Image (cartoon, rainbow, N blue to C red; front, side, top):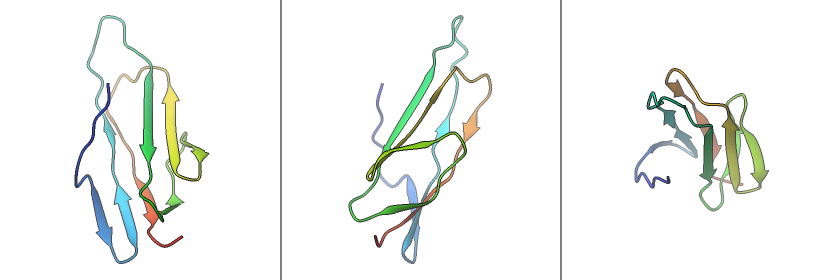
Length: 81
């Protein structure tokens, strides 16, 4: 499943802060979690949540076992590379 969420981030000066949330669905057999963020052109990561990795200069991701409770993350980007 993939989501495109326009205006999911806040811009302040030359920084963009994105706050993705993962909300588990409570299935009988919870699925593993995989989240991939494609960064806007010309941006660079300033602050990345624990457990996230850079896949390349324009993509970061988090993967792992199913979550039991909701998780919120904060990704801070510089808009001037």
